[in-house]
Image (tube, rainbow, N blue to C red):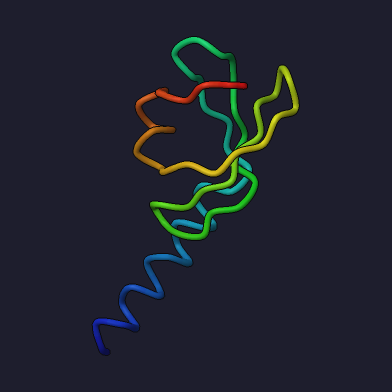
Amino acid sequence: MSSYGNNLNRSRACKLKYEGMVFKTNSFGDVKILVYENSKSVLVKFLNSGHETVCSLDKILQGKLKDT
């Protein structure tokens, strides 16, 4: 299988794994992953305010998100 095929399979696996999951932020409550495009583009919703934003998976896992 090509490198492209492997990346596509990994992206699908991450989409299935992360969409719908809830994570804690350091200061702004919980966020829910709505859409996982790739590790650099993840749509989340802050559960307290309802605000939605796009960020990286890395920031979600570290809890470094800010609600506006």
